[in-house]
Image 1 (spheres, rainbow, N blue to C red):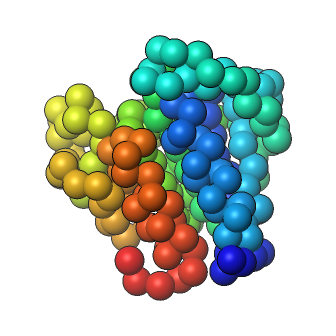
Image 2 (cartoon, rainbow, N blue to C red):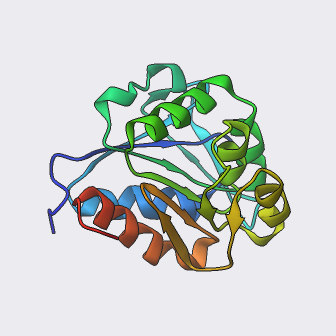
Length: 182
């Protein structure tokens, strides 16, 4: 399948990223023909985990957040893992990248604890979202409408709750990149 040929997707992540939330979108979007690159704050390989605390593998990255040119991508994916998300939310480069993607109206796909970055970048207000359930209060307090659904699409913003929801999450990203109504 190559329905995403020519599409360029960036994934931003840090240590303790939830492994399936990084690897499944990366690998499946590549299988669909997209060019997918992973960026970390330092540009160094990142430690992946399962269930937030069980280290798995080191994942090689394609560059640092400072190397990521928003004009050169078609979509941004932000995986979860509470430690990863907590690091990203405090990173000024990550906040700027998310804000630029949002301003450009490009697909912005965020899963699990990743919406913390949406909050810290000042982009949650007035948005309809989902996330890992423990973020519901944070998102509501930031002015978002939180709902417990597998995937929520609000314009170009795509959010999902957890690894079990990844097939629907990746499908929503693919649909958005194809320019179809989601």
